[in-house]
Structure formats: structure tokens, C-alpha cells
Length: 388
Ligand SMILES: Nc1ncnc2c1ncn2[C@@H]1O[C@H](COP(=O)(O)OP(=O)(O)O)[C@@H](O)[C@H]1O
Ligand SMILES: [Mg+2]
Image (tube, rainbow, N blue to C red; front, side, top):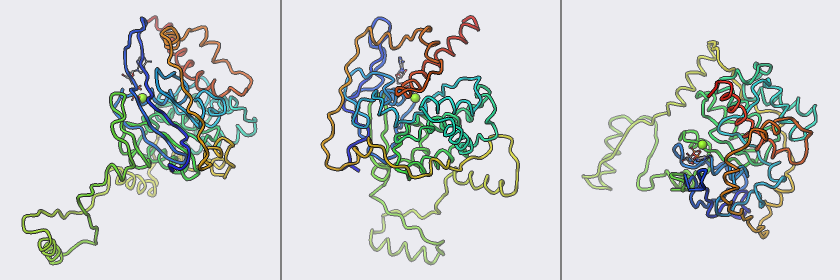
């Protein structure tokens, strides 16, 4: 992997949030360096508030770094060509409550300039894939947290992106939903997609990630492949069919002869994870046709996602070995005034931004920036209505 140019590269990436007077309020991301290579599934892991979402928002060009350098596909994260190749699942989904599931996907498809026919095809396939086929005509405002997560995932994939950035993709999902999301990520990996997942759910990351970065207090504290981080090289384990007491004794005797009388050996039975056990129980129940009232199982990968598509020029460029990497794009540090403006979005702007416009080249910007603003607008509107 390392002989490819990284798809994402950061050096000294830092984000300091300031208060109204420009005084530093929170050092959300503090001097972070990392690379993500094409085809990797990388997990950004850490407790709440450690800076995962802030890092992700800088990769998407939604927040300006205070310091450091950052490049995504060899360019600034704000470049239009870059954004076309990115799918983003925000931590909280920003959806227009009054649109149905199918209208929501159609809306995002239109922002990417897809034809009406392509939008219809992809939307239907994606809804089936995320287990929302039965809810296609329901308004997303009525959706449960898990259903909202599913429609958010479908939305992130409508443009069949090369790089998927999923902020807490399994939050709010039951174990079946988590398993489906993980299967989906594995499928996307097989298709050569690069995926960055943030999570505080360790098992999610463990099952799908090639590599993890553990963040705490805005800094990356550990990074490596799961093997590198988790393998205990000072011990060995042999898994065999069940041993009879006689064989066990003979094995222990051999071990004592080699290690001495004092050494303690541990012999036990391997245990399956609770998650696997749970999934087996549900699978059996499904075979016995036990009905459940919740979300219907999805899991069938959308056909359009399964087709082999030619790599975009941008990715081919990245994949060329030995090619001199483009200089990393330096994001200028922001002035206090700009920072304040960024953190205090005006309501008039919001209402303007959420109107659907003719698809244009900067459409992806609109999704990313517009979605943030749509959410803020919804919140302000709720505040106004509830007289807060
Ligand atoms: N817009 C903001 N203004 C001020 N502080 C923020 C803002 N967004 C995040 N923070 C602070 O930055 C830190 C990191 O937040 P975040 O990146 O959301 O963490 P995580 O996603 O890991 O839970 C937290 O202390 C949080 O309170
Ligand atoms: Mg977060």
C-alpha cells in the first residue's frame, strides 16, 4: 500500500475552536499526522469528544484547519473533483423531514447531476440494500434512529464514491443492523473503495478495519494494523479438537519438560463472541419464521454498486507507483473573524441554501455544506416554534 500515493494525508493537522471573543475554547484536534492509502478500511477510534468528527469534517472541507497541512486525493478537500469522489455519512443525519425515503435519495442524486432514470434505479436498489424498501414512501421525519442511519448510508452511496467517510455508521443500529453495515463495508472494500470509519464501538472497528488509529484528547495515541496492535507475541495458542484428560496430561508433561515445573499453562475452550452467538440465535429464529415488527432485513448489495466501474482519472493518477506526489495543499490558518463567521451561520443564508438548485459542478459542496445548514435551520426553526 505504502508504494501508492495516499488518498488522504495530513501533517500537523490542528483545529482550535474559539469563543465569540476569539479566545481558544477547545483544542479539538492537536497536531495529527496520518495517511490513508487507496483500498484501505481505516478506523478512527476514540471516546466521545476526542476529535473524531472534527478530523472528519476537516477532511471533507467543512471546517478549516487552524494549522497543519491536509490533502485528499492529492488536492485540497475543497476541490470539486475531490468532492465528487467522496461519500459522507454525518454523525447526525441532516435530512429534510417532509421528504419520503425515495424522494430523499432522488434529491441527493439530483445534486450529483444523475439522470432521473439513474436516480430511480439507484434509489430503489439502495433502499432495498439498507432494508428500507418497505418504507420507501414514508417521510424520513417519522423514521427511528436506526432507520435514519440506514437512509443516511444510502445517501452517502448514491454517487458510488471512491472514498467513503462514515461518522459513527453503526450508532443507533441493533446488532443485525451493525452486521449489515459491516458486511456492506467489506463489500465496498472488495470493490476497491477506501473507507474511513469513526466509532467508539470497538467491535465494529475490529471486524472490518485493516488499520486503526486510536484518538484521545485530539491526538492520535496509537496506530497500526489490528495484528500489530493486538497480537500478543509472547504467548502461543494451539486450537485442537477437544482433548481427553490423558492427552491433556501428556501435553502438559511435554510443556513442563520444555518450560520447567513453575510455568503455568492455561487450557480452556475457545469462546464465540456474544455478537456471533446473538446473530446465530436470530438466524435460527428467522428460519423458524418468527416475525419481528421492526426494520426488514436488507443486506442485498445494490446491483449498481456491484458492477465493476472504471476508475476515475483522479484515482488512476493516485494509483500510479513512483509518480511524484503533488505538493500537499496548505490550508491557511483562519483569522478570528473568519472563525467566528464560520461558527455562527446566519439564518437568512440557511433558508437560501436549502432550496434545490439545478445540478452544477459544485453540487457536492452543496450537499456537504447545505446539509449542515439544513440541520441548523431545522434546529433554529424548532427553537423559534417552541419559544426557546
Ligand atoms: N463547533 C464547535 N465549537 C466548539 N467546540 C467544538 C465544536 N465542535 C466540537 N467541539 C469540541 O471539540 C472536541 C472534539 O469534538 P468532536 O470532534 O465532535 O469529538 P468526537 O467526534 O470524537 O466525539 C470536543 O471537546 C467538542 O466539545
Ligand atoms: Mg463525533
